[in-house]
Image (cartoon, rainbow, N blue to C red; front, side):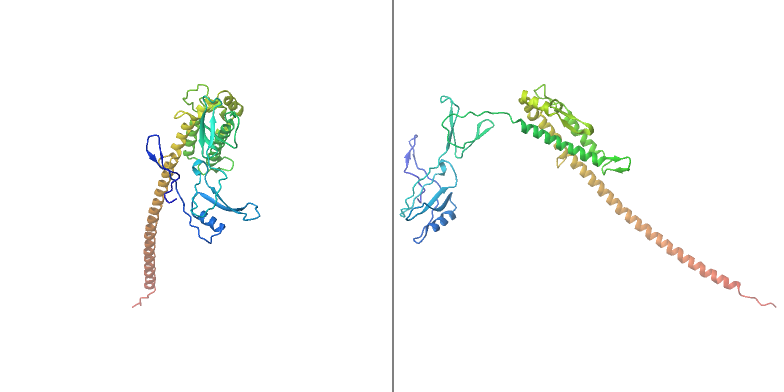
Length: 339
């Protein structure tokens, strides 16, 4: 057990002697340990097993120790060495891989295995979960999931229309109440809207000549720039030319997905996107305005001090003139005696 050997050495096909080993966990059991103590020690050892005690209903010594691997598959098989304890372990179920035969014709079919009951990529784009043992061939029919395509396009249209609604609200002008949106007169929203509108309305240079624009799939621009979907037309294309629809959305570099993603990235990139540049421009404008405000405050304080000083000087002069006027009035009242 200390060497973690699984079996005796053997000679492989190339003539070399080989041995097989696996990670081992050693649990020390004392003479006075109960089954519950053994379970606690095994579970606390951090090994890939789960131990428990159960009652098998026997009239004598009905308590039993159960040890189960926490993983599945052939490589999860457990090997016990109980030393001299003579625990009399019995194997109830061996760990083994699930085997799947792909193909009905034995001559051309092939086998694949999985340590779980899940087989990923059996055929390109297909994953299988096996629920029970099969004794005959099972036919797997594959149909295109058109519902998810329709729902994803609807979600895209809904999100775009929300953007249009928000932009309209921010830039509106009510002629009756003379109320303006917070961004009314700002050209940035208009520029972004035009960029998105142009990206959605353009033709895409893909191989399919029938489907090269959203309008071909039933997406049209309604009043106020809102997108509308003719679902019947989209479903017709999905039935008759599913690959063409797929190519339109997923074609690398030239398809709708990559093109619209490129447009959105140019708008939202945190380094040099349009929104980032606009935010930086507004921040710079705010900073400049704040600096100008501080300069004007200093200028006004200077003018205030100068005017206050002039007022004090004027008041002082007026006080002096008033004193002089009083003195002059006193001179007038002096009488000169006659001779």
